[in-house]
Length: 101
Image (tube, rainbow, N blue to C red):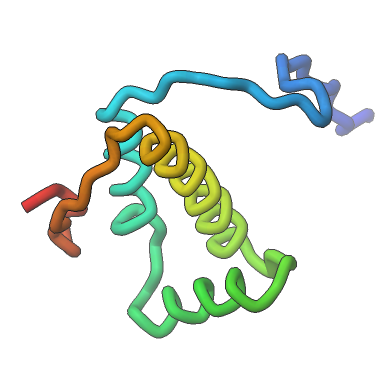
């Protein structure tokens, strides 16, 4: 019996390419909320451990670090573009809900 599953065909970006996209505010807000409250850190200490790993290493030893680094990178690139376009602002965010206050 062959338990090997066949590969899945997906569309993906060409290696080394850069894509320019428009991000609606709602999607950006959801990404920020996911970063702030959606990644299942058990406590502040576990969150700080991940952030320290990201700051001090290029390695991602676990899924939480990998996904947190991905979200931080994506959000930083969006904010960089928003600042260049003059549409970046500062808001206070509720730490529990991730929503603006």
